[in-house]
Image (cartoon, rainbow, N blue to C red):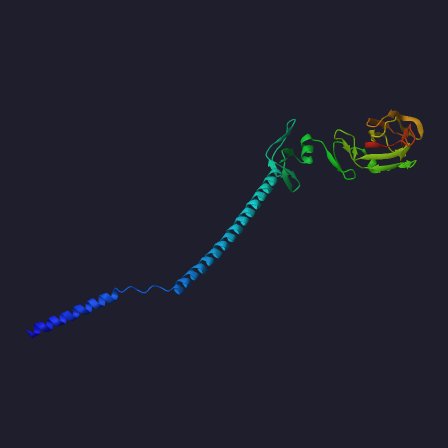
Length: 288
């Protein structure tokens, strides 16, 4: 009987202890203080600010990369244009044959140890060596260094007069030699004489009976001139020599003179009005 009571008391004590422990475990944790919450909020704000700075930094990086990409694209576009320019200006060898009256040339043109394409295309135009043309046509060619001219066939004995003869000027005349002369319609000559005159202009050439023929073009190039002019081309001071003409500005006159046994050639402009001024061009003058 006593053992049963003791057992009952023991179980009762265990039950009460268990209930007390469970009740303690179920006790609600205390609420955080305002100070603690403010610290948490502050920490969150700081973290948020850091995140914003990181985002801003990344945006700058993205903008910088976009700029670099744009620059690279512009560079690529520029290189593409350069490539297209190189392609359009490229010299392309051709395999085309050249033929003339049964004489056929093909492959490369050989000159000593040098071998070059017989035909080239450059900007849509075909080119071939001068010597290849000479071989094809079976005619001789030669190069005159003094006149910087390649001759086919018999070498010409002619030259630009303005390259070898300088005129003697009179009556306050001035002469420009081998300056561009515009004859209109796209015809610009850079060989010849431009004589500036007032009332009277004279230039003389000492031929010393060395030459046979002179050809060229004469033009008065002064739009303000509206009065008639007398143009003389005379031999050895003979006023009634080769040529006399009344001309106005803009008239282009071809001349061909036999100067055999002529010592002095004179070109003169005589105005019909006092103080009349202008420029006479004697262009593309060939002397033989």
